Image 1: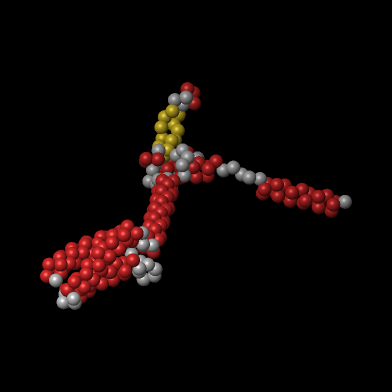
Image 2 (image 1 turned 180 degrees about the horizontal axis):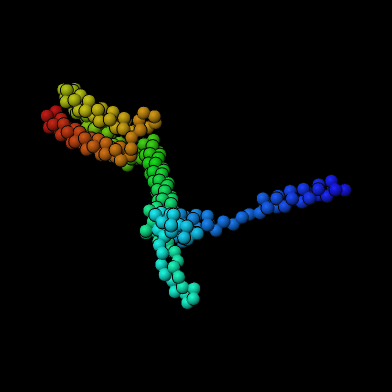
Length: 225
């Protein structure tokens, strides 16, 4: 019986110790220290302990407070008199730095996407000749005039103007070859339509000059033969 009582007593002690171990202990002193270092009020406890032993980093100072019969000296803490500073500003700076890095990455990604979209648009523009249709009718009209004029000169002169006709024909072939090359499309022949337009404009001017020279040769053939 006595052994049973001892056994029960031990069990009760163990249960009490277990409950005590599981109980959350609130430490006001540590809480104040954490809050002071983070973003809470600059306050430490116990006050007089920090005043005498940790005055340097706590910024503790003694002052007189009037409270009637409870008047006396008390301790307060000033962050500006402390040797250390809060860690929260450092975290804020770190977060701001991280935010700026993320913003910079987003801006660079947006720039890369813009360049990619622009390159895709240029590639699509280079793969299709949108300018040739604008110049096609003028080219065909002037080619008809050149061909008919040169044939007339050969017929009218009985072949005596062969040299002049051959020279103008070669110049015409060069112009037509250039136009054909500009009009080529597909891999290896990518050219932006703005550049195609300028090249076609130059070719049109050259062809107009050639038409004028053929017309002058036709006039000579009519006059001398």
